[in-house]
Length: 215
Length: 227
Image 1 (tube, rainbow over the protein chains, first blue to last red):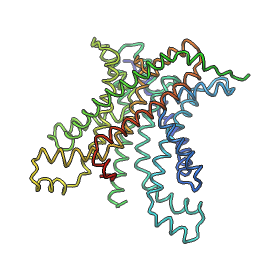
Image 2: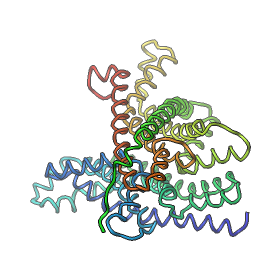
Image 3: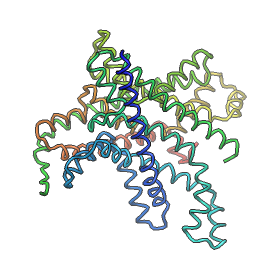
Image 4: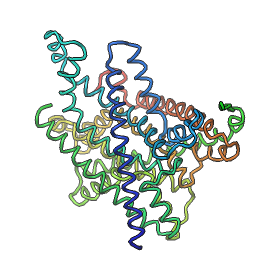
């Protein structure tokens, strides 16, 4: 294995990280909106958000990738950059999971807190921003960090339909020209592990701290 | 220019889609069954086995849960081919899925086992149950009943990720659709058909797990209370 090939793999890991970070940012924003819609006072909004979660969680990411890659073409965009299509598909998928995770966190804030905020005369928005969300955030951190691991792993699917050059894609290319699958896929697995394992450990640590605090 | 949708030429390939869906169901079924057995055995080993065995299972679970399924299946299937081990593509695909889902099952069942209160075991022993009976009736069965919903969602996800195995040549629903794309050049329509097909499969799998739950967890069905 030459140093050039190793550099190529590391570049792929860079692509994986970029895609993961973009997905985390956009899916975080959309997921927060969905979580809030899930606990909305309007029944119709709640139902739409629930339907979105159900449909997206029942769709393979690979199919979403295809829809996001070929769909914008039909709407008149000439060529869709691979990074854009991959980020879009991952954002749609991850936002459904974030929405469901965070809904649980918001609803697990003690009922008395909601009532107390109302008694103090806070409006709906004030109650959410100043009372509920700060408390939900503490509960939400461990599962959110845990789901970041899923995002990193899911970016590997972007190599299939879309052909975005991330770690799996580059490892496949190297294997196609050298026929050393154990070496290149083993190295790729180690790079993924190096990104994901610290996140997993961190998530577990946060969870442990939460349990000690009696949350 | 507006795009003219043409679903009829895609749907003309319905026998291919149906065949692919059947393969997806079969792959999911065998992977779920074998993965459940391996996962439970690993969970038992990880919570009460000898120290060495516990370490091995922990390494297995951590490695699998922190690397993508795609890389795992490339490693396994292309790797085995490179050292001359030949196996049918379906067997290799199911093997990759089993190794993957076994680790997830292990984590979920382990959480269930650890949630059984120590007092329950002592109570079981006080009632004169043998250690084996205590393990089976007081620990393992209630543990699995408690985590059954989590297991069911994990296995629905498993059915969805069988699509990834098309990358190593498995001819399941997604793999079969590649041929339709090549023949019709109607990529977008193919993906819409796939989307609907997978939603139907998801509903089917969820329904199947509900039915199995009703049959297996008689106590829950009759009392309607979670453990």
